[in-house]
Amino acid sequence: MESSWKAISDDNRRQILLLLKKKEMTPTEIAQHFKFSQPAVSSHLRILKNSDLIREKKIGKNRIYSLNTEKTYEMMKFFASMWGYNLRSLKELLENEQKNE
Image (cartoon, rainbow, N blue to C red; front, side, top):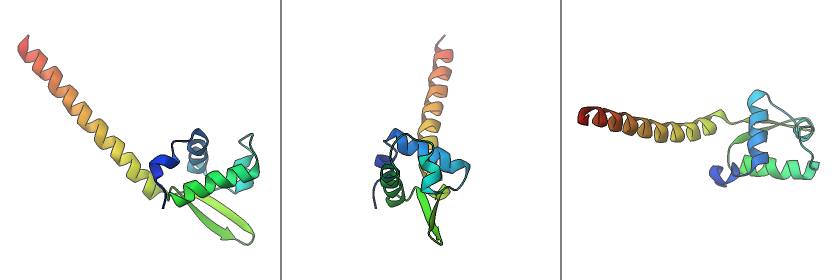
């Protein structure tokens, strides 16, 4: 499995995630939003799938991609905890400054 953090380092892959947040899509539908080739879209999808950020289901000959909300939520929780800590630190700093005035 590839790193999800490395997978989202690419702007195009982040854009694909935003598209899939709205609805499930085929590679052809995703490609309509970009100026690069279908094989390039497939390469980005493979990286996102290998990092567990998206899911793939096969319906007949079609592959349908969707956002893996559990994995993206896990990443969001990481940032929320980071910001939560910083906000508590900021609050403590401001409170200490008020006490010293």
